[in-house]
Length: 94
Image 1 (cartoon, one colour):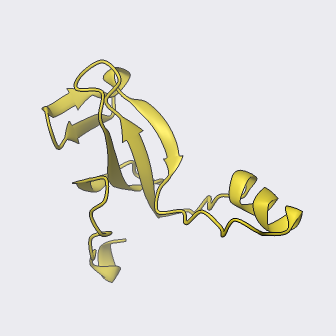
Image 2 (spheres, rainbow, N blue to C red):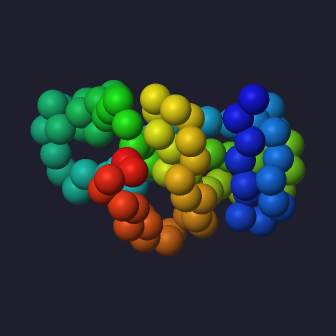
């Protein structure tokens, strides 16, 4: 079972959380083409390796936070609050 360390509540089992998709996606400007808007809404990275994700502690504090997780091993490399910058991770271990 995946265990996540909520930055507000501590380590909890995955069923307490809700996956929110890829994090650090910039919303496009107000006036954009349909293609740009569709790309923003529907296109996401799906790497084999490190992915930055959003998670909601649904059955805990109810807050969103970010997780840097390896999609192959499910190793959680970093957990940080919304609004914080992406952490710099070693290239050799990502």
